[in-house]
Image (cartoon, rainbow, N blue to C red; front, side, top):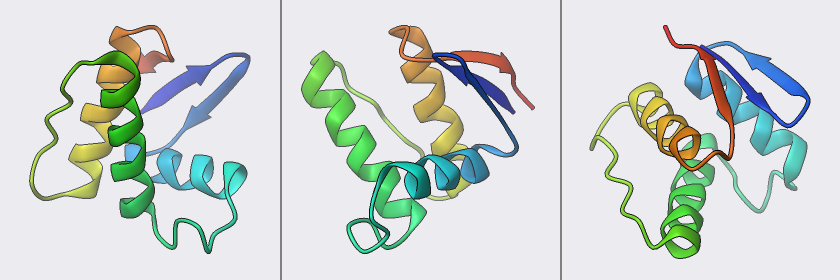
Length: 83
């Protein structure tokens, strides 16, 4: 997967990109793992957009890809390559 946020392009799996974003933006003790960060982003997305963001029940990779897709729909990032 390849996404762009502002002028920065991130490459890797959805989970890898999410982990890089978590480590770059937060004290790791605030969100001790990538999954907790993903669910916080989902909560913020719903609160800020008043749109639902239904994620698969299992599979961090699939959850990350769905979340990035929803963020792309509102223009928060650009998915350059999905795969």
